[in-house]
Image (cartoon, rainbow, N blue to C red):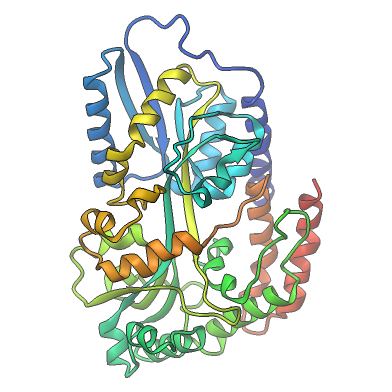
Length: 416
């Protein structure tokens, strides 16, 4: 099964390279209404309802456009399914793209260049640029924060993270102490969103506090065996097996159902708390040994160069991402626009969050945060690292040896 997974991962770059060969058919020779299709990974009814609303507004002034379809593909196999469509000739007109695979899409030539709005923050477009051109609109630029169940924290006899933020004592040591205290009550402590001992790259919400990176900025040198990463992963291992501040392997604790003290995730998850039966809060990531830090998850929307209607897709993307629609999308996806990165704009779109939360987590996070890890050939790297980290998740693991083993596995991939 693992060999099959790695083979599938290796085809991503190959399919994208194929997709970048030659030009698309553009809109030449089109007769009758033009239908557009955009792949997305959300099946959230509120998301799709907003997208349909924007599409309906666009069609009012574009009689040449027929149907605009938003095709949802499960997140777990989104990139593989998308590249399979591309490789098989079933090329969508537009697609959401994860920041982790941005380099694959941008460098392969699979995307058509789009106009760059001067209102976009430079920090949000960097991942999607090559040779001075922009190849995807960074529609969601979402810092990670810590959602807190203050009822559980208080019941465990611990000060709330908000109190610690105010006192200047919100650190990873204190977060671990709080997580451990809550787990002693039978609830979960610290949950890392989408981790589940498989999505290792979600741990960047922790290791960045140690100044660690999985590989060097130029992508050529493995960082797992470096002192910063060894210290960070040692701390995580200790959180799980010694401090018992994180649910262990095979244990599921759903923060949004009230089963955990904290979850490290993006603010778009706040919508899940609309009917929460507990008191909750949102605070920045705790201060780590390397100081204060922020981690930003990002998604772009690109126009596939070999799609059937490149020009029409570009025009729709320009409308979808304009000032007015960007403000609407901010209800779920933090905007990349300088003019909209204010508490006033964000508060209108996110009524569940207080202005102070939006400022400290979202605005400050976008302005100073690092975009999550990316690399050419990321799908294969991701699965190789996951397999190499499997021996880590047991109480007596030799952390340093495991991380050296990770580098031994991925060094040939980094050297490609």
